[in-house]
Length: 109
Image (cartoon, rainbow, N blue to C red):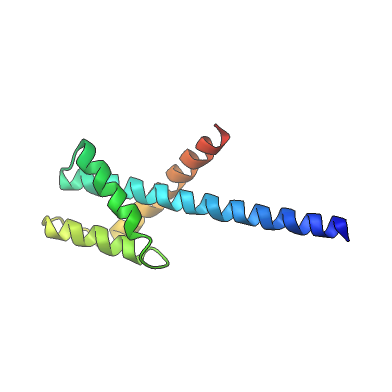
């Protein structure tokens, strides 16, 4: 029974680590998306970083990516920049492997 319990604990720990890693990857993707949008908005340096952070925080409002897309699209629209939800989601999809690579690289040290 002890071996079974150990295996179960190991699976739970691996699942938790996978979930944490996926959260970090999504947060990094959102930061990169925020930096992309900040560039479109003409923001530089600290302003761009602050905007990117606000995009990361926006993802905590609800499950899924709709809150992030809504924020970025709304901010771009306010500045007179037109990007559709599809265009924003395509950018997010392109940034996901970049974010994954960065996070995995960070984990490996």
